[in-house]
Length: 206
Image 1 (spheres, rainbow, N blue to C red):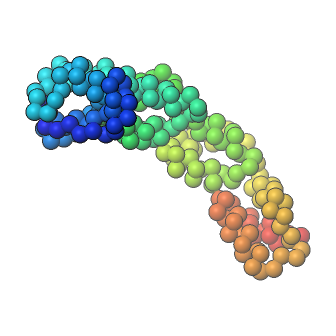
Image 2 (image 1 turned 90 degrees about the horizontal axis):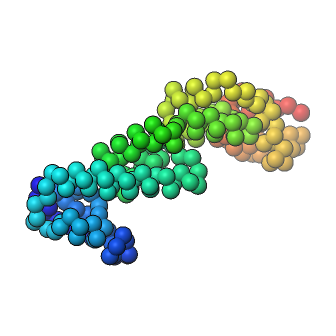
């Protein structure tokens, strides 16, 4: 395998002696290494990289780094599989390293989308509509099946009660609201994921 180019990513201090570098093999981005790692493996432009060295870089250096990166991200808050994949992709880790890392996280139970969805629903069910929770979980990359499973057995707040809470929080005056105020509140509640019939009923009730 021929190293066809080495391009600096940053000039800041990295592991050892300064900065990270994109390493291209046969014209394709292979991985990103620190300068000290380039020296350790004797990697420079136009050199030949052995299969053994390549496998060691992926299987030991980058796989370990990816796991540590994910564990650091999980220290502050739970993440979904899609969120961690995106972080690793942004870090330009090779696809096989990303797959191995995600598999390891799932196996070790550090990563569990259904558990994430369960906890998210439990935390938000008293203040958000089911539809809003579903949309937020979908944006976090959780599949529809896992979201549906997470809702199973959950006792959700009544939609009418949640709408009334929002009306009170927004100091909505049902008695004196004009057409413009009604339209504004209707749009707000619809964006929160409530059904149109429930919103219309709440706005009409005195």
